[in-house]
Every structure is written in structure tokens, then in C-alpha cells.
Image (cartoon, rainbow, N blue to C red; front, side, top):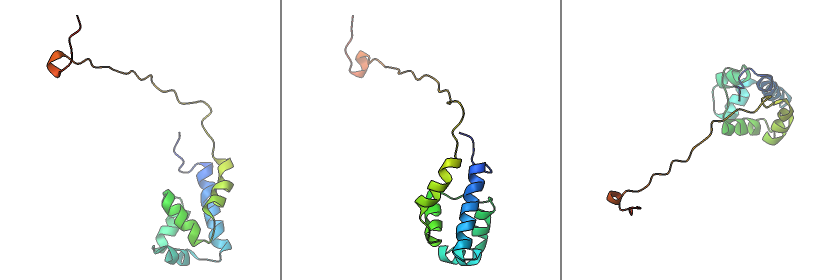
Length: 108
């Protein structure tokens, strides 16, 4: 899977978060205060300089009085899978036979 940073889906997520903040009537500083983070954190997230992990995303959505699932549901159609599946190498199972020295039995 390609990295999502600066992808159309990532840009859409940033737009959704910024729009949700503006609909809530919050400034970046007010949202940051709700999160217990500096204003620069919100600015970096909205500017695409800082990525969110899942827990941070949920906290951010809650601070916006938004449901995380609604944001994901809106975003989901913009996330695309690769055109072709990634080819994986074949895995081989290696069976180690125990020798008599290891406590195994000898087969003749």
C-alpha cells in the first residue's frame, strides 16, 4: 500500500477535520485547549505536517463534538486500494528433525 500522506484521501481527511472545526465555531486555539495540546498541534494536523494515530483522531473528533464513525464513513469512498494485488513470496515450512542427541529417535 502506498503512503497516504498527501494522497487525495489524506487531503480529504484534512478538509473534513477543518470543516468540522469551523462548523463547531472553534478556532485552532480553542480546539487545542479542548485537547490539552498547543495550538501548533492543530495547525500542523490541519496543514498536513502532523499525522494522527487512531486514538488522537478519536479524541480530535470528540473535541469537535463529531462522531469519528461519521468522519470515516464520509472519507471511506476516497480511499482506494492498489489496482493489482501485491505479490507475496511463497513461504516454506522447514521441519527440523530431531537427532538422537536431541532426544529424538533414530530412523533406519
